[in-house]
Image 1: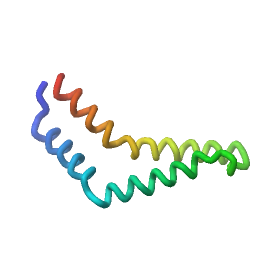
Image 2: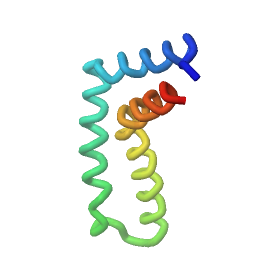
Image 3: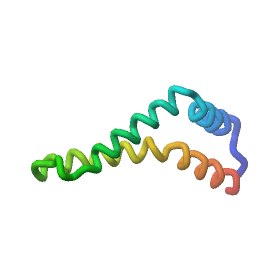
Image 4: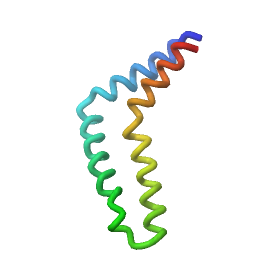
Length: 79
């Protein structure tokens, strides 16, 4: 089915967000944080490891949001 107007606006708003300086700054900061969290040498125990994995999972969701949004848009356009 062709995307309805509500979906189209949702995706356009997302695409507009990805172009803002604030989003680009946030992504840059999140990438820096991701690098520091990937340093497993700083983890003291299993609890720290699980906490770090949770943070990395959330970071991955945010860092891939733009790509995920574009893929989802393409999939909906061809349904």
